[in-house]
Length: 389
Image (cartoon, rainbow, N blue to C red; front, side, top):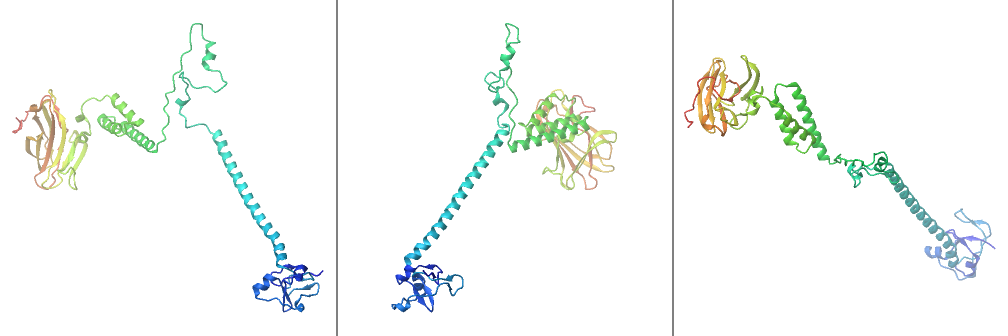
């Protein structure tokens, strides 16, 4: 038997295909029926066209030996190639199944790791109160005897074990906004306490800082602590006695601002007097306003303060009580003047006190003030304003 190979597809051609005359010989080369049809070669009807190639002769391509073989048919070619195709599809199917199995195994491995980590970590989401049983005592693990049962054996006859109170520890908050607010409140409270240690002579300033914290952070722990400190803080005297009394007054121009020329500076001491406020008008034709709302008590119907101007200069001052002018004068030089204004017409009423500092020129228009306060008796002759009725 001789073996032949197709010059086109290089597949083996059986002898049966030669018998069926389905092989085409062209220029001393052998082609199967498919390759011959693809190349446009036609089969010859003569018997001389039958393939008769010596055994063990190499093909023109030199890759496969052209051995003597039986004729090749199309059916034999399909029969030979089918096993190769099936094996190729089987290999792909086996690879796909292997990938699926690997993916499932990896997923199971990850799930197992997560479950193991959850079992290892303590349950931080449950608040302490959640671990309390109905009797008000912490729940015991299964199989562990309760403390009440164990303690009952040691109690004297006729007595019972006290009931343990439920945990009062609130669950920790995890809201980012709340945590930030609590942190800011605590930071402000710490700053206020540090300021109070450096300024023990000004309890009113400390109270003002605490009031700001308590009102701005009502629900924060630091805000609650600030409110408690205010209730326990024993302050002697009045806000007017504070070395920073000007903070209780609104100071500025008609628009509420000092501007580039306006001035409001507190001097600890000046001319032998404590807590002296230095002011300057914001503009040539604009006054500096010092204002505050206060209640005139029955026992203190006089508004008293001291004032002076800059050396060899003068300023004009006006005082209004709830829109009524009660005093007006020009102050010249650096001599201190004490003024006691009779405001008894406003006893028991809440009034708006407005002090105006007008410039008389525009050359060192400074004025200096002590803390305005309500007193029971005037230091000198009281002045009653012309518009007070």
